[in-house]
Amino acid sequence: MSTENSKLIVPGVWELMPGKGCSAFLVAGSEKALVIDTGMGETDIMAECRALTALPLELVNTHYHIDHTGRNADFGRYYMHPADIEKCSVKGAEAVPVTEGYRFELGGRTLEVLETPGHTPGSICLYDREAKIMFVGDTVSRRPIFLCEGDYELDDFRRSLERLAGFRDVTMYAAHDPEPNNYETALKLIDAMAEYRAGQLKAREVCFGMTSHTVYVSENGTGFLVP
Ligand SMILES: [Zn+2]
Image (cartoon, rainbow, N blue to C red; front, side, top):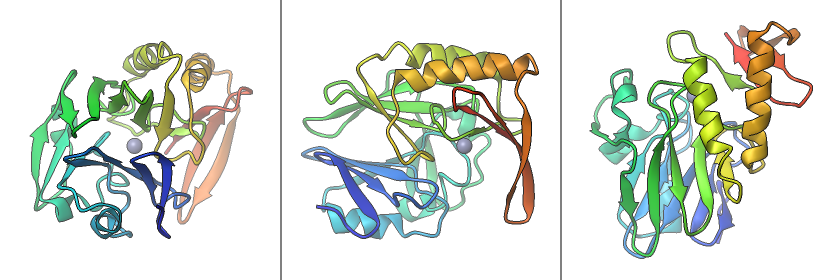
């Protein structure tokens, strides 16, 4: 089943707040359900999850950015990579570190943590090996990816994209992209990054509300957004 603020994407997996700019995900096993990110804070993610499942909930964040952690406090506890816990300003909830290889055992469904630094130092992906799906946060996306000063590291980012490009049969769900991705988007981003670093991408100014950003987009459609 789906609700007004959720869309069933594969059996037992929902995209929460689809089309609202920053999606979260709910992945249900037979014993537990895992919430991946909590959006910007406008939507009551807990209520959305409760409309979909009565299972105990755990929360993990793909990274610490505020548009992914807006409702973390409602859960009391969240898993995050230690490099991002250091930067995270969420109040009223306990941060639990997770690193490469950690497995969220949900009952008949396992999500593994892959360390994919670059967008932030502690960016992670959650990989369901059986279902061949992965939740990639802001690491693989057709929408231009934010490069925030003090957070991003392009050599790490390229290595992470190269790693993800190796998952040839996996469907990748990003937070800011309405359509699923796969390894091809990772390959395009590797090319776009090389072009960006060589100064070959044209800059375009875009406005989000009161703030203006610069977007660099490759002819292959992927690119980066710089504050
Ligand atoms: Zn981000």
